[in-house]
Image (cartoon, rainbow, N blue to C red; front, top):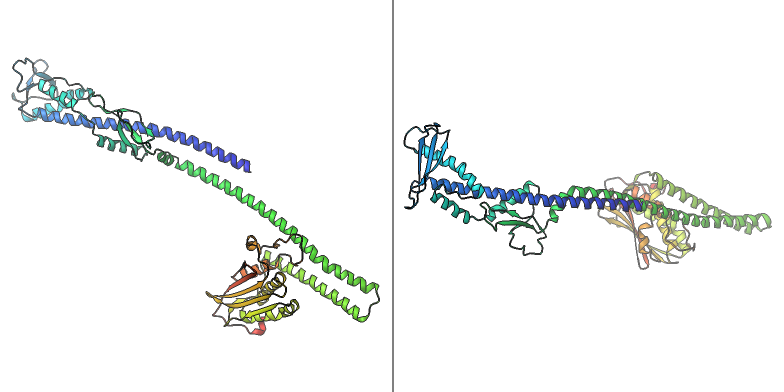
Length: 494
C-alpha cells in the first residue's frame, strides 16, 4: 500500500510537471501574441491619427487647391490637387485622380465635392502611402508634411501598455508587466520572463522595438493549473487519508490484540487463584477428619472464593452488555445525594478492612436527575473499588457531590501512584490496564471503567480523569432535571 501510494504521488507529480510545462508554453505563446496584437493596434491608431491630420491639412484652402473636371473620354470626374503657393522655380503638374462614383454637377467644385475628395483620397491613396511608410510627394507641401510627421513619430507607451493589458486579459492573463525598449535592460532582478521583440514602428523608423517583462509569471502558471492542482491534491489527499486510516485501523487492531492478550493473562491469574483455593479447601474437606470449627473455616473459604468468581463473571457480563447494546436503564427521577450516601454505606466494610479513610462532602442541596439507581450505584462502587485497589494502603479517599453549570457533579479523589500522562486518555478503553509488566499484585481486568463510562454516557453525562502528583481524581457530570418530582429514598436502594 505504501509503494502504491508513493507511485501514485510520483505519477501525479509527473502529470503536474507536464501541466506546468504546458502552462509555461501557453503563457509564452499568449504573451507574445498579445504583444504583437497590441503593437498592431497601437500602430493603426497612430496611422489613423496621421490620416486625420492629413484631412485637416487638405481642408485648409490657404495651403492646397482642389479642382475638378469631367473627363470627356471616360465620362468620370477627375480631381486635381496642387499647392496654393508653389515655389517660383517649381514646375510640378497638379496631382490628378479620378473617381467614377462622383458626378460633378457644376463647373465650380463646391464644399461637398471638396469633402468627398478629401475623404476618398485620404482613405485610399494616402492611407496606402501611410501604411507603407512612404511619403509620396503628391504635392511638395503635402510630401514635406508627411515626411516630417514620419520623422517625428513616437510610440504612445502608455496606450500600448493599456492595449497590451487588454490583450492579455482576453487570453486569461492578469498579472503585472513592464514594457521596455529593446535597447534597455529590465533593471530589476525579479523580472524573470521576457517576450520576444515587437516592432512598434508605424512608418519605418528604427529603434521602436519593445519587449514585455514579467516579474511573477508563476502566478499565471498556477492560475492556469488551478484545476489540475486541486484535482491532484484532492486525489492524493483521499489516497493518503485512506492509507492513514487503514494503517491506524491495523495499529488499533494490534493494540486491541495486545489488550486482549493482557486481559487473558490477567483473567487467567484471577480465575486460577479462587479455583485453586476452592480445590485445596475441597480436598482438605474430603481427605482429613476436621473439627467442626475447621470445617466451617474451609466452607467459608469456599463460599468466599465462589462469591469472588461470581462477581468476576457478573462484571464481565455487565461490561459485555455495556459494550454491545448499552446497559438496560430503568430511568426514574432520583436525588443523587442519598444515592451517594447509600453507596458509601455499602462500601464501608471494605473501607474498614483496608484501613482507608473516606471523607464525604455531601451536596448542599438536592441533585435531581433522571436515571437508573442500580447502574449509577454500580458506577460509584466501581470508582471506590478502583480507589482502594490502586491507592496507597490506608490512604485517604475524598468523595464530594455538588452542582455546577446546571449539572450534578460527583468527584472522587484517592491518594496513590499517578497515572502516566500517556495513559490518561485510554483508561476507559475496554480491557485496558495501565502496564505493570508481569506483576499482578493489583487485581483487575480492564472492564470496570469502561462499564462506568458507558453508563454515564447513557445518562447524557461525561466522566473524566486527571492525575497529578499523588492524587487521581475522577469527575462524573450528569445533567440536572430540576422540574421533576423526586422518588422516595426507599426506592433508590431497590
